[in-house]
Amino acid sequence: MKLYYTPGTCSLSPHIVLCEAGYDYDLEKVNLREHTTESGKDYYAINEKGAVPYLELGDGQVLSEGVAIVQYLADNKPESNLIPAVGTIDRAQVQEWLNYITSEVHKAHWPIFRADLVGDQAKEVFIDKVKKAYSYVSDHLADKEYLACDKFTVADAYMFTVLRWHKGVGLDLNKWSVLVEYQKRISERSAVKKVMEFEGISL
Ligand SMILES: N[C@@H](CCC(=O)N[C@@H](CS)C(=O)NCC(=O)O)C(=O)O
Image (tube, rainbow, N blue to C red; front, side, top):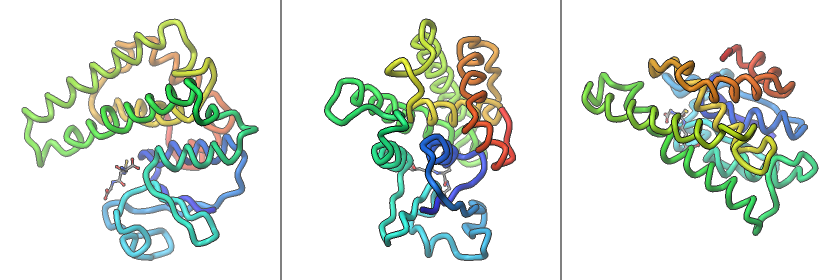
């Protein structure tokens, strides 16, 4: 199994899940500015979408889209308890979080990072959207340690990944103390520590 990743981007989520679930995996770093891999290949020739994460399963099958990748990885290591069984309300709630993060939070960051393209007015709209998302997640976590099921799931790996971008979009996480605690709690997991060290990133 091989994960194409770029340090600190959304591929951090499946990287954490691979490590949490105890997979034996390889990694290949992608330069997203050049769309080349560290072994010098044209990344578009590997993944036509040009985005990370991208997973080669080793049997010729491939998978893109972070939320599909983490569910596949967790489902195939049920003993890792990273996702509830299909058909349960717990599973639907984890999917609810994954979908919220990918469609409402993750993608709201791009116009903020690329204000040079979209302009300051659009940037402000998306900063406001991210702030509202922080408040929503903070309210939800006020009496909980994790997003769903009272335990760490793939949804937390993804939320942790997007929360790390607060500095990049100029937000002070200290305004949401619940999120600071949540981020700290997850960063202290041994798999998360190992992955962050490998990617050369910090909180
Ligand atoms: N829909 C994809 C989006 C992935 C995505 O946005 N990846 C970003 C990094 S966080 C990327 O690779 N951007 C560079 C590009 O698309 O060329 C997913 O959820 O996996």
